[in-house]
Image 1 (cartoon, rainbow, N blue to C red):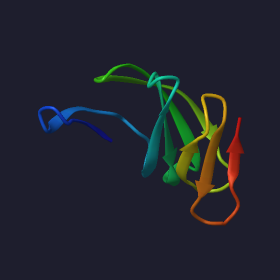
Image 2 (cartoon, helix red, strand yellow; image 1 turned 120 degrees about the vertical axis):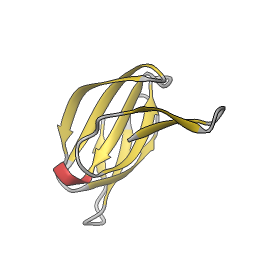
Image 3 (cartoon, rainbow, N blue to C red; image 1 turned 135 degrees about the vertical axis):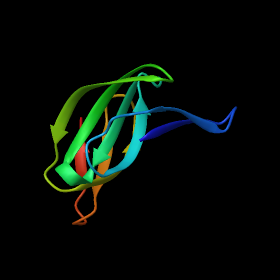
Image 4 (spheres, rainbow, N blue to C red; image 1 turned 90 degrees about the vertical axis):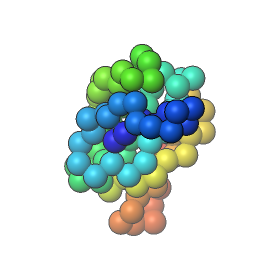
Length: 91
């Protein structure tokens, strides 16, 4: 996954993400990035210390293939799956 600068219109870093990332959101004022990883049925959590530094902190197994997210607030996340019409709720 690449981080692009909109100021200079170029890639500034590449984040090592497990296979098939589908979506990414930021919580906690941009200090945590969460990606859905279709290839491993996991949610990957990254600590963001700068626009160029992303450290994988944990992975959470999903019951179904995670596809996209909606951030409700810093404590609640809605994750939808690609394979079934049942939402995954994370708190």
